[in-house]
Every structure is written in structure tokens, then in C-alpha cells.
Image (tube, rainbow, N blue to C red; front, side):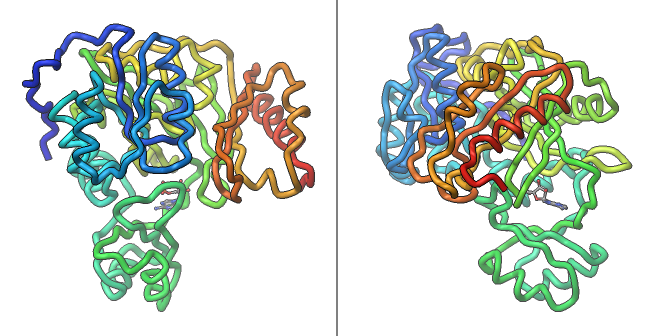
Length: 394
Ligand code: AMP
């Protein structure tokens, strides 16, 4: 795959950065878009959100919103004509959607980055052919192929749909002989899937990599703990120069170069005794980077705004020795309306809600960030604050 910049030929296109006052278009209307829009507003940009859903956390805080389906290419063209540059808050934006949009305004990161990252099979193949370490994997197209691949991989494996997977959706474990039929049905018997060796990792971490205008900068690593495949807790240390941090930066730079990146990506890793394996690339800010809003001079969202507007990224300056972030999922509402006063009285706890109306179990409704002297203290304080929210503490 070659990741070339699309030719800039429309009149309104310019390789010079867009001044504040310009309008940034955004595909996707969720919480990442909401925090992007707030960062854009702080820098004086207007945001126009394109999203099909009725509820739109990003649209609530943006100047303009188009509610249309991603395959309504006329609506996409009108949207793209009304903005000066476009970015996105999720990677499953359809190919024809971004290609259409790109005819009218530059899409950043460029559309080739999306064509790699929206399909797990293409992404893993791209990483492997770029010389980067990933879990051994095979492409499979049936339960029988899955069974053969599982054998080949040596037993336990994880089978994943190639597209529209996040937070563990569209994936399941195949542990033993005879489980492949059920696993194949569980992921919806797709036309193609990827099956990976199960990695008994020591931990998981992520790194944000921003590249543009000849410079590459990093945030992280962020150390991540998941619950039911959904991120639960992230911790970060400002002075992290561990082998993991050094390797994360080296791999991050290699991935960004291989993609000819003109924006920001998040790379998720498995930490193993032999080093880092790349699990996934998201071409956008990431849940694990939310703590940069309080912990760094430039948040991941401000970085995305700067890059979308065509400025080079800057190295964020830490504002605290350590930080932790915990997600607030819909589960917190199980015992009734959470005890907001319990958190709002904590001066050191940054409290974010995304304005979603239906608190379903597992749904990301908000998060809490705490800055502290150590990641352990930050994590303990954040977890305590979250427990205090629940009416039925478990
Ligand atoms: P993903 O949707 O690929 O980001 O996977 C979600 C989570 O599932 C990861 O953060 C891991 O905790 C787990 N997982 C995914 N792939 C593997 C694997 N090959 N081995 C072990 N755990 C995995």
C-alpha cells in the first residue's frame, strides 16, 4: 500500500495552515468529537459536525451540524463544501464518504490512513509488512478455516471481524477444538475475519503519535486496564523513560512514517517479555489520552485541531508528575441517579460527562481524571471518586 497525499487541486485548498475563524468539519458525533469541538472553539475555530445519529454529543457544542447518513454523498459533498478542512473521530467512515469529501476540502489524516485502519486485516498486514511486531495471525473465511488457523497458531486464539470493531465488539476467543463453529457464529459468520494468536500479555499500553510539517511528537505511554474489553483505568507518568516508553516511541515513529501520517494516531500495544506488539491503530484521539486534557499543556484534542488546521504538532509539556483516568460507564446509574455532589466537591478531580441521555451498561457516559505525584495515588483517588458516585457501591 502506498500512502500518498492526495493532489491538492481545488481552489480553496492551501498547504498553508488555516487561521482561527476557519471551519473544521468532523465526521462522527460522539464524545471524542465533543472534546475536539471544545478544543477547536478555544482556539477560535468553528466546527461543523456530520453524523447520522439523533443524539450527538459533539453537535451539542459545535456551531453547525449535518444529520445525514454517511452514504448520502450529496449531503457529504454539501458538508465538505461548507468547511475548510475535515477530520474524523472514528475510523469506520466509509471509503466513498471520505473520498467524496476530499474532493472539496482536505481530509486529515489523509484518506489512505483510513483505508488501512478501518480494516483489521489490512491494518495488521500493513504493520507486518512494515517490519513491525504484531500477534501472529491469519485471514479466515469460514469456521473450518478458523479451526485450521487456530491449530496452526497453537491453541488459544482470538477471532475478530475485520471492520466496525471497537471496545471488544466483533471478537471472541476460541480456546479449544470444537469451539470454532460457535465462535464463527458469535462474530456473525462474516465474509472474512482475522484470527490472532492469544497473547498472554503482561499489560497493555498506548501511545499517541502526531506527525506533520516535518515533526513527530508523542504523548504517553498510557498504561491501560480493561474490564469486559472496555477501557476502565489509564495511568501515566510524566517522566516515563522505561524501555516500554522508548520502544513505544520508536514504533510510533515507524508507524507514522510508514503511513506518511499528517495527523494523529493512537497505537495500542500488548506488553510482553519480548517487547511491544502492536494491537491496533486508531487514526484519532483515544480514550486512553483523555487525561492529557488536564495533565499536559496541549491535550490530544488540541493537537488534533492544530493538525487538522495544518499546523505541525507540538511537544506537550507535562503539568503534573502523574495522572489517572477512569471511565464512567452507564453501569454507574444502576442504583439510581449517581451522587454527583460526591465528585463535584472534590477539587482535585476533573469531571467530564458527555451529555448522553441513555445510561446503558457498558456505554461510555463520561470520565474522571486526577493529577497526583504518582500514578498509584492518582489511580486510587480516581477509583475512590468513582465508587462514591454509585448509589449501590459494589
Ligand atoms: P481490540 O478490539 O483488538 O482492541 O481488542 C480489545 C481487547 O481485547 C484488547 O485490548 C485486549 O485486552 C484483548 N485482545 C485483543 N486481541 C488479543 C490477543 N490477540 N491476545 C490477547 N488479548 C487480546
